[in-house]
Length: 241
Length: 241
Image (cartoon, rainbow over all chains, first blue to last red; front, side, top):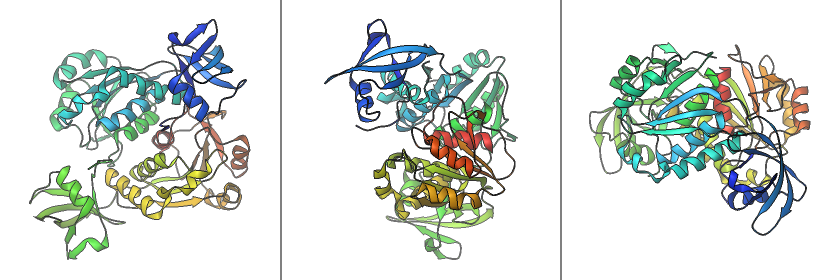
C-alpha cells in the first residue's frame, strides 16, 4: 500500500452506517486502519461525518474484509479558512497534491481556471474527473481532521470567468493575485474574507494580470522567489489567515 | 522526462565553465532547457552561480549533447529566510519534497532528526545520501531562483541533539515547536531569527515536547488541523517570516 497521507480522521459517509451508531468500513479505510493505525478491537480512532461532526470510533469487530466501529460524535469540525482560492490548472501530478493541500488547510472553495501558460493537455487529464477530485479532497480532509468537503469548480475559459463571475465572487472580499513582479508586498493576517488567485508555472501573463486588476484584484508578491503552487498555497494561507 | 519542478533559474557550478563568461551544460539542465524552456540560440534565461550572483545566460550554441550560454551576472540572490528548521525525518518519498520546499523557501539550515514516531527504516533510505540531498536542494533553488545551498544535517539520536546541541543553536532565537495540542497560537511575523521544530506524522510524543521545552522551545499550534510536513513548513514559514 502506498501511503500518500495519514488518516488523522476517518471520514464517514451515509452509506457506511449499518445500525444506529455503528459503521462498517471496507477497502481503503479498513486497510489504512490496519496497516498504519494497527487498529485492534477496543482501540479508539478519530472519526467524522462528511459535512458534520467529529468524535471517536471504537473498534468493535475486525474481520477479513471490514472493520466495525461504534461511533460517538461530540465536536464540531475546525472552522473553515475564510479564503476562496483561484488557481491556474496545474500539471495533473501536481493537481492531486494541490487539491489535498487545499482540503487539509480548510479552504472550502477552489476554482481551477485556464490561463495562457496552462498546457491545453492538462484539461484532458483523467485526474480532473469528479471521482478523483472527490478522492483527493477526502485525503486532504482525513489529513487535516476536517469533515467539510471543498467545492471545486473548473473554468476552461479565462475571460468569461474573470469578467462575468469574478466581480460578484470578490465583492466585499480582499482580492489578491500572487505575482512575483508586483510592487506591493503580500499583506498579513487579513481580517474578513479573502479571494486569492495564483498563476501557473511561469506566472500569469501581463494581460491576465491587467484583467484581474480590472476585476478588483491587487497584485502582491512574496519576494522574488517563485514557489511551486502547493508551496505558494500553504505559504500564502499561513500568511494571510 | 518527468518534470518535478520548474527551473526558474539555471544553477551553475565551477565545473560548468569553459571560458571566461561561457558555460557548457549537458544532461538534466540541457534537457530541461530544451523540453521546457524550448531554448533556441539567442534566448536569454535566468542563471545563477552556486553560492553567488544571479543574472542572464544567452544561448550561443546548441548541439546534440550540450548548450552553451554566455553569462552576465548582475544581482544578488534573494535574502535568506532567517529560520533554522528542525524536522523529524519524514518518509523517504515525502523527504524529497520537504528538502526541495525548504530550499525554494530560502531556509538555509535544516536538521533532520530522529523522534519516537519516526520509523527506523527511514534512516536506511538511499534518499538520505549526500548526492540525493544535494540534488533535491538544487531542484528547490532552481524553483525558487536562489543560489545558496541549504546546509542539511542528520541527527539520529534525539536526546544528545536536544540536550547538547540545541541550547547553543537556539540561543538568541525565538524557538518554537509546532504541536497541535499546544495552548499558545503560533505567533506571526517574528522579528529576528527563529528556530522551528516540526514533528513526525502523529506528532512528537509528550516526553519529546517536554525535552524541547526544557531546551527553550515554546509549543505553538496552528489550530486543530494536522498538516503534511511540507504543508506545515510552508504555512509556518509564510506566517512567521
